[in-house]
Length: 259
Image (cartoon, rainbow, N blue to C red; front, side, top):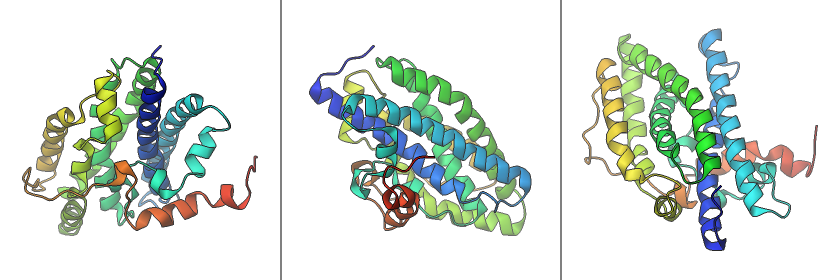
């Protein structure tokens, strides 16, 4: 098992929080669809995806808490950090918008997550590799489900296509952050724990381009859009504070409460 020294442990914890925060924040956003999906089957589907993401977040937080020691737990990491201590990508904290907006965001992230987790399988850190291996089975379904919906809506009615085109314009500028590494990602790559994130972009782009083409949606040209960044280093949009206020309410109102 990989045993980091003190400096490496700090970078590893940041890396684990980044992985966990991505899953947790998107799960929180998706869970708002529970009871509001367009049809019952898809309401259940996106709720189950939220649960998958919660499970992934828990695994990363549990590992991070074991490295932190003291009184740190998966719950304190999930619910008792301030906004600047979260490292999720900005795309995942954006408001849900309509169904097409939510679907396209899930598709962009799931394809990235699949590329990332595949490259985590040979990680020097066996715990991270095991989490990635388990999670890949779930992510494969997330990719398939969201891809089918992108195609269905993009190549659907005039109204559904217009909404998907609007979502594409709104979300595209946030996808570049996936591939712009934070310092803890660079450290993970140097240690053989994680991949060079820029190397994930060609595979992501190819898969995204293929699905958008089948959905009759015009993929933006690479390198032509200025990309939003900041989430990986704790600089978030104005939406993050509202999301955390809702997510953290119970733990902050009733400290230490248990079922």
